[in-house]
Image (tube, rainbow, N blue to C red; front, side):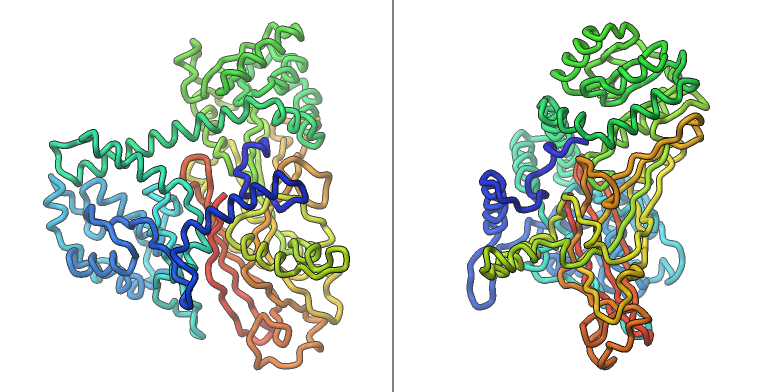
Length: 583
């Protein structure tokens, strides 16, 4: 949806003074974590990590896991090694254990306990409960979603490269500087403050500290969700955001064509518009012949504006409701399964940022008639590798004849942990485009928004001459389709592809910490030595395999993890460390 609603840290550096100030603020925020600049480049401690089984907190994951081993008889590193868990498996395991413990259940034997103390006294011996290469209870991608919002323990997990036989190495904690390079946790301090205030007020005082912590976590999470919602919907009261969206011709033409050029679908239909904003989609639906349109808008100001706009345009069939769609029945008498069509412009950056899709799915399940239509009804995320031109380096290498590449290198390092939302020149895309993931809005469930996909990047034919191409990262974009399933007269596609006209969504750019040298089969003659480290100019890779996970994190944000593996011509391979991007 609107780009102004995005955290300014995500924007690319700009020549404008205002954006430079924002960038300086971001850098200062990172400096706040630094304890001192000495020989060892020491960093301040991470936010406290909470034990998996009790309320004790520790300054590092190493201390936490040692405590778990000694006090709770749970050897995390041993479990990970014995079961052959990779980075994602260990991450899911942590979230699964936290989920089980919150229900007073043993994670390994599923035994239920009547009270917290009984659960705490239970020894979580686990090495014989599960067998390697079997399906584990935490295998579901649901457990990619952090059980504790902004759980710093998850950000301390990393994975060594696979060995030559493909065996997974032990999970270990990366150093603190590496963690801070990977993870931005701006809400941790706010969340800790909320927890502290709730503790001071004696929440759950009679039930012991374990129950206290559970109540506090849920209370703090609820408060944070409310605060985020208020900020989120409040941001959409800015007319500048709506002007930007209304000026996006790709966006507007796709929705207008889908609604106005499929009149057999719209004629006499009852339509639900989720997140109507100015009400433009509702106006299109009314113009196409809808008999009734209910327009739901959570921003109070924009609900008032949309009501006035509908009145000014004589659209008597439109009813605007100030509400979140989940609460609409508190504000309007409405029957379940009573709408023929559900329309919404729910897409955010990288498709899933803003998490408005969950509201659309709720509305589908609650209010759409059997056989009713969703517009759009499918969505697909694409990816491709980009070259040096997709970074800021070329600009800084020649500034009025002066070399300022030191600035460019620092910005590239920042981009390796913070996604950049910007348009990328198609000439800078060096690999074929591949499908990362597809969604069918008619059948998908809420948990399907969390997924893991593995793709392989191959150089485009135009890059197959006798030279090395450097892949600097992965760029993502999406298409949403108004397919012939419902739009039989005029199927339509809304594309944010870099190969098409620009949109306000632009593309989402994920930069590698270090570029990877690639070469085609036809260009193998340029390889001087296969004994050199793979992924270098002396030993380029034939293709890059990337495993990408996208999961909902704290409310209305997503976490993207990226793990790249270079595959050589002779079967050699190299794994680069997992990168985590908060959007």
